[in-house]
Structures are given as C-alpha cells and as structure tokens.
Image: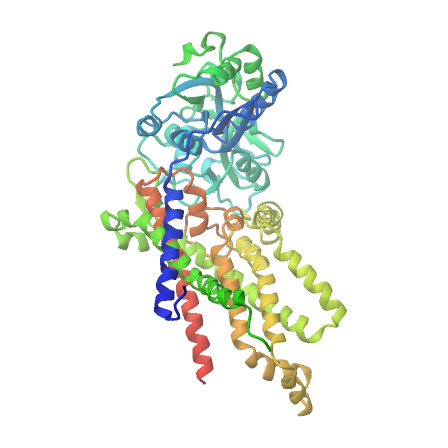
Length: 314
Length: 297
C-alpha cells in the first residue's frame, strides 16, 4: 500500500515519469513506416515538393481524378527541398523538384529506403525576372542580375542600370528572393551567380513563387524572380540578355525550348525506385498529350514530342 | 459523524499522487524539452561551431556551396528590434486599456470590450501575417514613402496588436484583484479617480501588471508566422524601423523543413532554438528578480 513517507512517494513519482518518458522517447524515435498507398479501396498517390510546380501538380491531380476516379493524388508544396526530404523519409510516392537531387540526397534516399530515386523530366520552366509594372526597365543582362543579387555586387540603385524610376523616389532596388528550401533559389543562384558565389544578404526571402510576384506587384522598387507561369497584370517580365548589349529575350515556350532564353530549366519528378502500379500509370499519363497540354495551360513549357515518355528522360 | 468510507481513505493518496504528478510535470517537461533541443544541436556546438562567429557575425549562409557561415547577429538584432518596437507600442496601449476596462468604463461597455479583446486574441497568427503582407505593406509604402512595407515597423505593429489582448486581459485581472477597500479608502481620503489609479492601484497591482507585460514580451519573442510574413525575412542588421529584418523564430520555421536531419545546418537551427530558450529564460528570471526586489521594499 502507499507509504506515508514523502521520500518513497517521490521516488514512485519519478519512476512513473521515467516510464512515461521512456515510452514517449521510444515512440518518437521510431521511423515512420512507408505510407500505404491504399486506404479504403481508393489508391492514394502522395505527391509533394517544388513550390514552382505546385499549381501544375494540382492541375494534373484534378484532371487525373476526373478520368480515373479510383486514384486520388494528394499534392502539397513546400519547396523542392521539402519534397526531397519527404522522399528520403519515404513518406511520398513522387517528389516534385525544380532542381536536380544532389548526389548526397540520392545516396541518403537509397540508404534510408533501399530504393534508388528515379528522375523524370516532365516539362520546362522559364524563370522570369519580374519588376513592378510602372518600372521603365525593359531588359537586363545576366551580369547585371549578378551585380544586383550576388554577394559583393555593386548595383543597389535603379539609376545604376541607366533608368529613372519615377514610381520609386528613393531609387533603391528592393531585392526579392526565395527561401533556401526552394529549387528556384538554387537554380537562380547557379544560373546567375555561378557555382561558387552566394547571394547578397538582405534580400527579402519569401516563401512561395506566388508570394514573390505578389510582393513585386505591390512594391514599385522591387525586383524578383519566379516561374513565368505566375505573371500577373501588376508585374512586368524583363527581357533577359546573356551579355550586356546582346539581344534580350522574353520568357516563352519558344525561347525556352530553342535555348535563346538563358534561364530556363527542366522540371523533375522523382519516384522511389522504378515506378510501379498506379504511380507508373500516373507518370505515363503526365507524358501523354493531354498531360502535356496541362503543362502549357498552367504557364509552363511542355516537352517537345521527342522527349516524351518515361524511358526517354532518364 | 461516522467513519469515512474505506474507498475514500484509499483514494486519498492516489489523488494526492496525481496532483503531485501534475505539479512536477511542468518542471520535467521544461527540462525535457531543453534537453532534447540541446541534444540535437550539441554535437555541432562542441565539434566545430565557432561561438564567437556565431554571436558576432551577421553573415548567415547556411546553404552556401563554397563557404558556409553561421552568424546569427543579424537574426538576434531582428528579433530584438521587432520585439522592442512591439512593446513600445503595446505596453502603453495594453496597460491603458486594462486600466480603462477595470476602472473607468460602465459594466455594459466592459462586457462588450472583453468580448472584442478576446476576439482579437483569437485571430490566428497566420492571418495577422497576411494582414502585414498585404494591407500594412501598402500602407507603410504610401505613408512613409518607403521602398518596401515589410519592415521592423510592420512586424512591430502586428506583434503589438497580437500582444495587446494578453496584456489587457491579464492586466485587468491584476487590477481587479486589488481589494475594493483600497479604492474606498483612497476615495474617502479625497483622491480623484486618476489619483486612485496612479497612487494606489498601480503600486498595488505592480506584480500582476509586470507579469502581463512579460507574457506580452514572451508572445512577441516567440511569435513566428506573423513576423515571418510581415518583416520581409531579410538577413540584415536594421538601421531604422523602415528596414526589413529576419527573426530567430522565422529562420527556424523557414529552414528546418529542408535541412537534412543531423546535418550542420539542422543542428545550428536547434542551437538557435536553445538560444531562444535562453533568452526567454533570462527575461523571466529578470522579471522574477524585479518582482522580488519590489516585494522587499
């Protein structure tokens, strides 16, 4: 029975707590099992990752649900890094990425799940550089972008680009960037600043592709980068030139595919191991004319005919 | 009176034990949380983190390819600037509102006020952040002719609005706890209403009011989503209220999801968590000491 000695009661309490904690810790430490793809008869495909692709992935999922009601595709964003992290943990079937997986990430996924991630190019995206619609600037070169965004870059005023920006009285360039979990961030850094150089600190690092365009549309002094599908009437897409003085090109399906637009990139989907069953059917459908049509209507660049199909992209 | 039923005598120690458990659990949880957060980051702390750089460098480059740098000075400056500004706004408003609700307004108005203030407290932080990102951003650009509205000022105002309800409701409770006999005595001596508040109620409710302010501060330091959206999330040391900043909490929220588990970046983020924990601990400790100092006078 319970003793009256306070010392003993205290030890009892500690024992209980220790047990409770042990249970808690053990619970936390366990790796989650791979998510079952099927619940209540309906197959579920978990699809997460790139924020650039989230609208596209959502459109695919909706259209696919309309033609194949036995499968539901659950899409979430969060950034390419988030999708890859989920793939490494085995909690998604398909990770959307707007950058390649790093070798270290592939290795971790392999050692963690026992399956090698398989890459599929499902479309292209031209990364547009946006300014406010009242900004008189029409064209910018990669070098100028580097000076604006790069660490140690000297360009901080619009007048340094040779323009007078009436809607921005104090002339300061407000840099809008993305958070470091974004594939767009990594791609832009590599395309504009090279492999070694870092971004200049002090940029506004926003959470989503849409947020960048939204903020630039509300901020006359701002410049930002995001997928070309996110354009609105409040912003303007700059023409991009490879070198100062060269011809600039506006982002579009043609310029992205023929290589004249310098910052276009492939969009990837990664599956764990060779896809099978419903996941395989889904990716095959994405490569169909109908799936690729959705790429175009979502504002991205569909694959050319000869690049379509699962085998061709690996 | 007859003897107590057997069941009751048996149940007594069990209930006592459960209550004791509840009391101790808070302490255990606090230490448990600290321990687990610290453990995640400890490896990197002892292995290669340069503590001097960590606290004195404003360069935060956790994902750099060539040269990773982990300096949190700019993030500390961000958290400090936003919190201080929020308190400068929220403390006078909050305490003023608490005094008004408790002493000056009619019972009917008081009910309405309390409901409205509770409603203010119930607005989710992401909604506040959304207000900051859209409405406040444009307002600040227009009013101050600033290049961008996502600034210390924006975050400070949003946080002030979020902490005012806490300060008001706890402050009002503190004032209500002052016995009516104090008020009656002061009025009998011929004090005006303001004199009653200023000379009698505020000194009497000092501890409670301080607690109210500190809970407000804690809310402001710990708030994540709203400041993430409203401050612009830019790593730099602010030179004025119209500069963008990034806070410690927002950095954790934004980067933890992608940092590979147990990587350096991941561990540094946990160390930032330890830092936040220490900051709130120091704030609470100082408050405790102040309260004790007041008591001894």
